[in-house]
Image 1: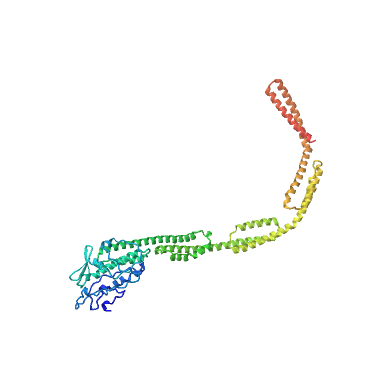
Image 2: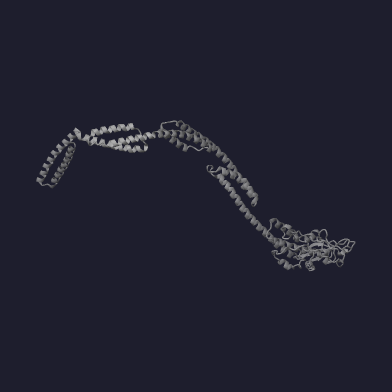
Length: 545
């Protein structure tokens, strides 16, 4: 195979159309367009689509194209070997279609990529190159200019005498920029991006579109680049808005956590469950670190302010706990001393056999114990056992004594029941003196009988009191009936009333004789009153015998 027929490697940065012929000793000096910076591979939906064009452009500055030395004239374009196409890389879909017109390029809008992006080709359609080269000119001195909107801008120089050959590298650079924008648009159409990826994409747009050293419809290129730039900025704003929203939610969650710790610290020490609170405070730092790791990062001032609040709350909690337990120790010591004194008093009475007063004394001690301050549970339990042991000793002795006397009291009850039957058979109306003697005999034996069970005491006492009242009433009636002074008073009153009745009868007779109704009525009323009094006194005299 001849040298002109040797194919270039697929990764060669030099196109076949610009390859230096084997017989050329020095390539012609041509100032190449600025190399294009492509987006990061991580940002692309198909990373295999990038290398062919980017590698050629990256090395085009070193392999500038065909140049001639002063001693060797430039090789005519017609003498170049026929271009040898490079093999397509896997996943390539063949050469790109014809380059869009400037108007179509300006109106092109981003659209979602439905298929994997094809890798940029190293060959462009001659019509694409010619359409782009139409915007450039080559002066007689080799200066290359481009029509950039309303201005003509110098973009390089060449020693190439043929205009098409001189403008071809610059046209290819323009088409490379078109491919770069296509790839950028595809990247932006991906569903997800990071802000770093979008920032790198914006930086690549800025570098590649800052006065590009290419020939073509640069205003349309810039317009499309601006649209892509605005799209990227909009995506960045969306990301920032979502990040801000996530940050606000994270701040709310962290603030809620901080406020929960502060609320715990603000609780009345007497109402705090110190075991649970201590565990919460021990988990405070691990919980905060977990929130830092799992949640959205906060800005440093906000995070530091929240952490200072947490740290202050923890310091307050530690100080409050220390103070609380210090005071609690003092209270426990005081409670232990108070209860120790109650125990001493309880133990001093445990051997007493004065049952009634001692029972009341133990009841008072129990009330004092209930109102005494609480101490440590273990100490309280031990002191309560001692206090209760003293009580139990006394009450066990008392209960044993009660059991011993219970049988005796029941026997006493049987005796008193018989005495009641004897007392209730006394009839003071028949013979008061015998009744009084019989009652005194019952009362003497009643006292000798002794105590009875508490439940029966009131019942039998009431029955005896009833007999005593009957005898006493009969005695009082007899005394009134036989009292001489009472008889004398009754007889004197009766004599006086007889004299008064006679006097009022004379007055009535005179009033009737006089015929005065008022005096008659007055005399009749006075006479009737004296007669009623006399009747009462005469009944009393009959009762007295």
